[in-house]
Image 1 (cartoon, rainbow, N blue to C red):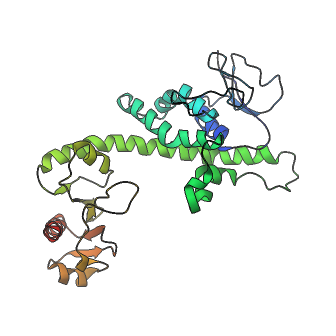
Image 2: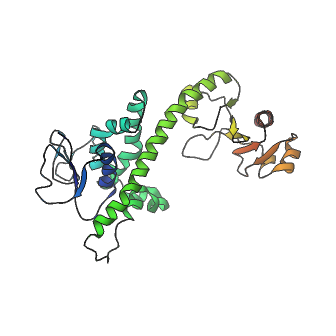
Image 3: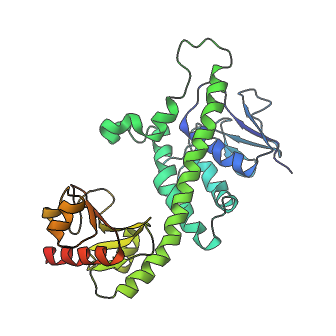
Length: 305
């Protein structure tokens, strides 16, 4: 039967049902999204998907709440929120609707669940304290989406619904952007692996364009590669390689003598015409041609060695 209604609770909202709505609206664009606690609406029916309300988790009945006791748990014992339940049931269909290639879908489904969905689940259930984000806690996605709620003295009878539906496209954009980025990383993986094979024992990796490359380096165990070069518009870029996504530390820095220099000053130090820029933090340099950036990369390798 066709899904005609997506039903979640009325009143104040949280990230979990907002993000659940973002997924479901992509899959059922003709359905009406209704916010209600009326018994008639939160009673399961074949034409409804009910989430974050209703006091039950039953896939067959299309109801996905997590507030009941005991609440639904992942295989590892961590709690689900409605977002986790919706993603587990509808995430793969969502990826298909987003045009994710079938060969990449399962890996992307798992990565999105681990990196994006699970933190929402844990925060919503109080299983993770927002303070783990330290001074950035106010900038986490749940906090930012929560900031879109109406202020306490907004007397409009539709304030909560108005704020929810204004926040929904914002939530949708974050989910879609994450999926697009994961799909792009999957596309980049094969390109980078081929470039690593072509580079052989060279410490310099040349790519056909800027793209994510660190995970492919890890997969290939290409620890000998120190720098990456690639075209960048009309110029060429020379990049260091972070040790991990959690640090700014690199396998190797560009030469200290280059730091913060541009144009003629950089050309004089490098000894090559066409050198244009080196960041003060020594993680990126720019040159006018492939030949110049390759020479700079070779000098950088010699400086390290």
